[in-house]
Image (cartoon, rainbow, N blue to C red; front, top):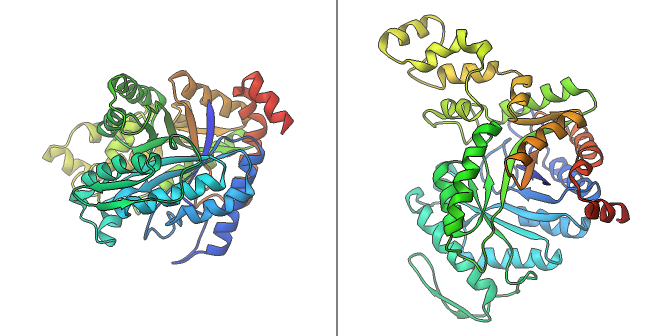
Length: 399
């Protein structure tokens, strides 16, 4: 099992703005500490316009600093939004970071969401085709002395595109995925999965099987098949077991709040989220089970009398999620949290179903910098060693 930290680039804030200077300095400090205590990867999103939720519109700028402040940890575009950029510019940025890091780059791809796409003048209906064309172009650019292209969206006369990547034949490629269709698409293209949704472990196991089965018939878009599954999961490691679980659960629920870009405006979003987290637990069935199972007029009227809306908004599913306690989320493996022993227990759940890397979300708008640093250090010193081979442990002690 490998371990990464995924950054949306968040910090606690008040009002309509935040302290950008502190945010980026804190992010660099957290990343440097992660390198020092043995994490394997850093992953940074690309998002636009999402005040509070993400301050990472151009992560490659942070990567320039991290290339000099880190030594071993791999640095991942998690992900680069292909429809938003000319593929040549993406290829150049990735290659420059790859050179600065002596080949420590991982390259994830995605399409973003309609809110961000429209804000940049991009037709959401075109993004699947744009992503596909850019994805086919990039490994060819990285491997060619001279490159030319005639496509639907981009035409490139013969040019030498500089610099060359450090890794040969090219960095590993991935797709950010949230549903079964995306898992199959990644497998078809022969690229890895960066699972961008939170799941109970038993549900996640089914998605992993879909991907592992499908990738056997991959037609790789690059020079090789990357059969890798990285999974986003909220995490907080602390000395006080229950306090750490509560802090992590609050962090995740806030992350998926109704004002967040992956929830706002999506019909059925909380129903999908509740299902992914394992459904209504037994101790909440009496309160919520009947509202989630039925939606005829009589039950809508009864739900309204109980203060639960089934016609608009997230309704009963959102209310049920709000009542899901930290221990239930922990027991289902939706979060990795608690003291080091508890974190080890839940990481083993992911390891047992075949996840290659847990991409831990520790830095969020509800957790201050000092607590994030505490969690990174404790996880690195007491959890990661439990999953190291003898060779890895020896190398870690030597460094």
